[in-house]
Every structure is written in structure tokens, then in C-alpha cells.
Image: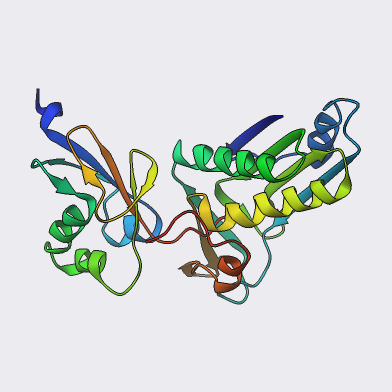
Length: 153
Length: 87
């Protein structure tokens, strides 16, 4: 299994990411990808941007451990995570997760697991920007229900 | 060397803003835990009191998730931050 992780300010190109996943070998029969975008409502209404902060070093280590966990549970031939940080505008891309597997079930499941676990485990924090107001997003019970997170108080 | 007797404390997101502090270098006593450090910092009062308040504070020691009873020592990097909200 090979994988790569990028935490970056720059945007990413989903077509290029997808093409890069196609070289995972002849055993790959399925590629599942997920892309998350900045939407206009969260804790606040009328959100027109986000600020994303992370803990450099620890973030990459946590994502690496989540990919390893996914590879232990499902067939994962290649995994890719890109997460942006800094100031993002409405409709901007935030996060990309891609997984190559032999079969679609594993690809879907591993991709969903990495994404769900990332939300409650990787040290990123989102601040919503709406006009002149700012609000640090609260962790959601619905996200914790999908994955309890490795980060416990 | 002073480095031998200090640790680094880092704060992120809402805590970083409300404490107006990104990082601190503090002298460290022997046999200290992350929770004791948190309590000591909360005694500074004002915004610092929230470190032991109702809102959960996550702890990492050397970039690995930790608990209040995790021992800390000279040269360690201890981080305190709110529950994570990426993705």
C-alpha cells in the first residue's frame, strides 16, 4: 500500500489527483474519491469564507495513522489525502480523499472511514467568516457518531 | 543549558486567540503531568481560567494525544487545543 498526504494552502486539481491514483497497479479495480467544499451555512448563516488552522507535523502523523487503520480493515492499494489550510472562499475546495482498492466496497468504505475519522481526529480547526463576524466551529455530535475520534479530552 | 529545564507549550485555534498566546517556554518541575500544567496555567486567571472550565481542552504531548495524567518533562512539547473541526 502506498499513500501520500499534503497539507497545503494552495488549491488542488481533482482531475490530476484522480489520474495520479490510476497508477496503483493492475490489481486496482475501483477508485473512490471525496471532495469537501466551503458551503454557505454552518454554525453561522451567510458564511462567505473559512479560515483553517492546523498543527503542523501532528496533523500529518494523525492522517497517516488513519490511513494505516483503513488499510488494516479494507483492501487499500493507494490512498491520497489533500487538506487545505489558511483562508478559503465560498465554494473553494477544502479536502480531497482518494482510495484505490480491488473492489468498490473496500474503496467506498475506506474512503468514507478516512474522511469521517479525519473530521474528528486530525488537528484542524475551522473558523467561519460571515460578513464582519467570525466563529470557531464547534465539534458536531453527528460527526462524532460517525467516528468517535482519537482525540479525547 | 536552560533548554534542559524548560518545555514548550503551544495553543491552537480559539484558545490561541483568546489567550493571545501561540506558545510559551516554561520552567518545568520534576514529576509533573499535563493536567497539573493546565491547572497551573488556569490559575493565571482571566481568559486562562477557561483551561479548566466547562469547555473540553484537548492535550497533546510531543504531537501525540495525551491525557491529564500524562507525565511531562524537560524538552517536551505540550499542546492544548479545542476539539478538532477539520474536513
